Length: 378
Image (cartoon, rainbow, N blue to C red; front, side, top):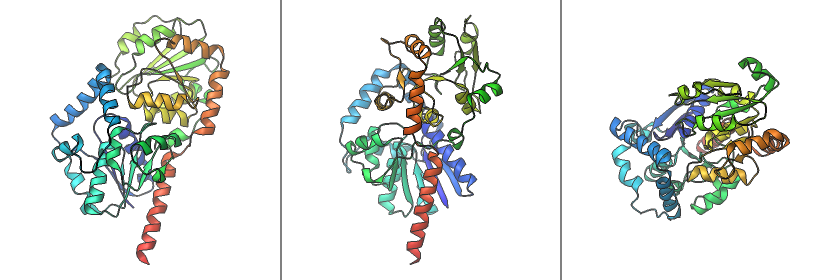
């Protein structure tokens, strides 16, 4: 089966989804490739797109919030001139333009801009490929409305159906398989085994603090705040690839033992070893942790999609949220004093959240592809 996966430069979650799908398809022996929809654009344009996104969400979140809410209120019309349409001809890669000639069996878009381009190609060239959009948050980004008419939409949770309907997307085409993540996250080792492999104390509570891929969480401030707690626990801090804040963390004199790590290839093992995870509520990280049945404490959601991730999961009692008026040290102290609070959350995650999301999607699309082949042969 020939599969092409469309992703986008800005952000990291949808690129990881693309890699997870590529990895699984390669293991199946399929012809698969990931295409960055602005892959052949100049480095200046690519860097500009990334830098604007990173700067806005990190240093001007109010601007991002205002933009997101304004876009979310709009109703898309098929013949309307949009920012996406105006920029598409300037930055769309040559590989995208050659998709029509390649005639893939399946095309998967892991981001709303890429999905809107896929929708245009499908309509203009009447492509026979099965066209799929992956929604990588627990809500529907405003730009998904421009991607109506795909064959299927993969979502992380059934609750997203409401958001799909608001954005005029066909709910009957919704596949609540979960965000596609690497299969390794659907398998776990025991907490004791993970701690032994990592050299951790098997008896002490372990808290995992994650900075996020763009160091969005100020791990130094969080580490200092929770170090004031009287409860006995140990801390693991996972940094971004640039290891932002590493020197500042090393300079801290903490009473709780702290293990500081940069980028790790076996992140699933660190998940397995932990009792609680402090993280920003990105769709992909959240999905990985829920596949591991780990209770999460959310910090500093990006206004817009991440704030809606918090609302969706909090309203299902699947996570906790530290705020300015209920700070992280208060929340973590409460949970450490009464483990039944987060243990019951783990049980709810286990009952609610689907596993093997990538495997389920690939098998579903393989079945649909075989059905189409059979119909064409009649």
